[in-house]
Length: 464
Ligand SMILES: Cc1ncc(COP(=O)(O)O)c(C=O)c1O
Image 1: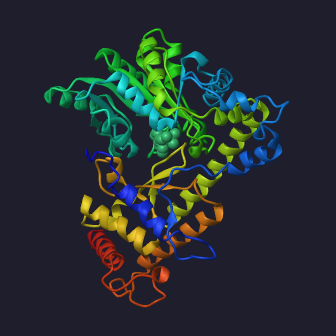
Image 2 (image 1 turned 90 degrees about the vertical axis):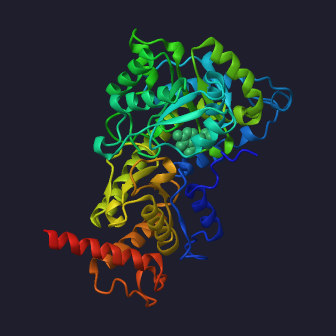
Image 3 (image 1 turned 90 degrees about the horizontal axis):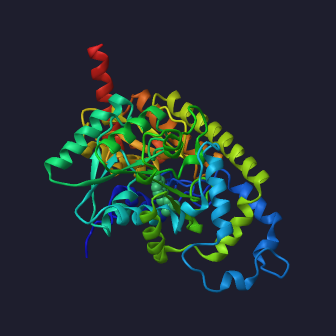
């Protein structure tokens, strides 16, 4: 009966609105474009092409690597040895070969969702707490809290420090936990960050590990976007730091990974915990009984991951395409005066729309603007409040889950919206059918929004 699932947040409401009215270039050109889903379709054609060429591995005929019996009969919770080996190698590849990953430290789970929950179950008791830097992935409320009874204490990061995790922010959150008599068992970081689209610098990883070591708690690093780092600075996994320094206890550092983002296979439900802590490995493996990956999926992916030439080419192409797409999208936004946090990874950007809130720099203003963007501009983006961001006006906008053409349509809509505002001539009076997107109605939030924006602009001008 507990209602901690988090389904009733704007993050999921936007998905529902999209489901009711999805954009289609021919069948529904004025529908909602889904920019709230961190899905990777940027390299999907390469994976599909590979599957086309390797059809035989799906047929399980005699003579193939794996027989039907091998995949259909009993599977214990260790997973297929060959798959764990292939996954370990892939995990090292996306970390630039700079972190050692032993197949025996890998526990397979049904996606990173299950991996995060299992680790939380292993590390903390109900009523104990994890520190989580904000803004963070909305699914964490479900994955880390809902069934475990563990509390999340936000480590507030904001635009003044470029949303970096700082020691004072860690100290403040930890002090808050102590004041509330909460035992902190771990700090969970997401590197590269969702929603920031940024890698965490090595120096910050050192500070995090120092802080955790000093206060005797674990560090969990969710690295599901490790393979999406498309420009410098390069990705540094927490494993790299721990393995290259004698200062930290490797038994207190755990990594969560999955193939959902880097390979764009969220439907396959393949995730992993990587740990060097015997107790965590043993207990996670037992708990993974509730979230196994089917042998068929493991056997298929073993073949894919063992094609090293393909994997290298795939990762190179994925990063190059992400770099280009990110660059074009950010340029499109900047051209119309929209600020974006400088990012180097992920499938999304963290967009600053604070100036569009005008005098309404509040959560209420953010929700109003979100509704304008969803209902009147027809884009499902995710408001910062759903990521527990401490400042109103930030939005996560995904660019990896659609074709380049669809992204152009989205940019065109944003351009039309902003240029309408900039023309300023008849804001507050946008009732004709050829106004912004042809959908704004008198009294709609868009009209109110345009009027408010114009007002703010005029005030700024008169101040200047
Ligand atoms: C940071 C982070 N962790 C975990 C997940 C869940 O991934 P999976 O599909 O592997 O369960 C997501 C999905 O968006 C995510 O962004």
